[in-house]
Image 1 (cartoon, rainbow, N blue to C red):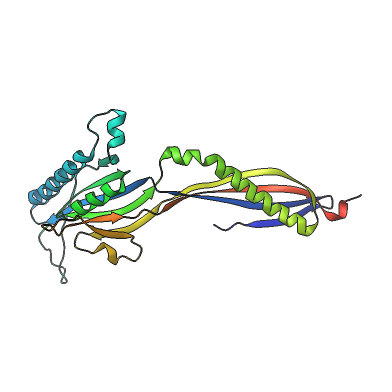
Image 2 (cartoon, rainbow, N blue to C red; image 1 turned 90 degrees about the horizontal axis):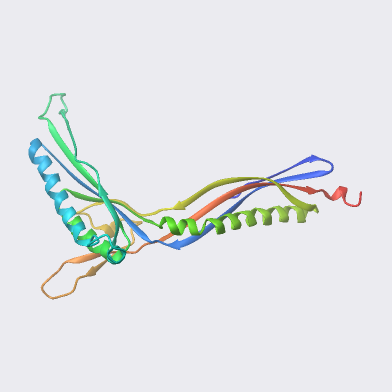
Length: 259
């Protein structure tokens, strides 16, 4: 984030400086957001829909195993899942054409998308291993976020740090220009954001995730001589909370001192 500064005199008795203060706080990710798409396409409408419905039910079964056993606080705390939901079945069709402009048989498409939040990243790896091996499944947009409570707890520090940064910049200018009696007269709170670090954009089940240049995924053997399966092990990055504030200051220019 780059700060911008501007200075201009108002009159011989007042000097004005406007600066942008910035603050940034890194924090370990608390939730892993995984987006799972189930999709199928073909000539048979019923078969296409059945592919998606069957696979979606299997994913729901995997999620049910990870969900809290009841609504008690203890059960929710023990569950590796924070939240999950899915879209309704989407079904469309289209008529493709060959290179000569002739109609080809109608194609049918169906899809369902799952949005799943994990608070336990080893469980996220195990779940990712299972779903990425399923037919008609694509894992998308694995991102890292913080809880709402954590973000709120740092708001005050972000505001203070951004304001202090602006004040420090204004003081630096005044020190060089020999201005005194620096005082804030106007403040505009800028954008406050939380950087969601995406682990990768998308990979199909047949693609080796480690081939993606930005991906930070390790493969971990599940152990045992009778199995060759491996779990994906996701390595979360830091989430960065940031804020900007624009503050206008007045000061007494050097020429007015002692007047």
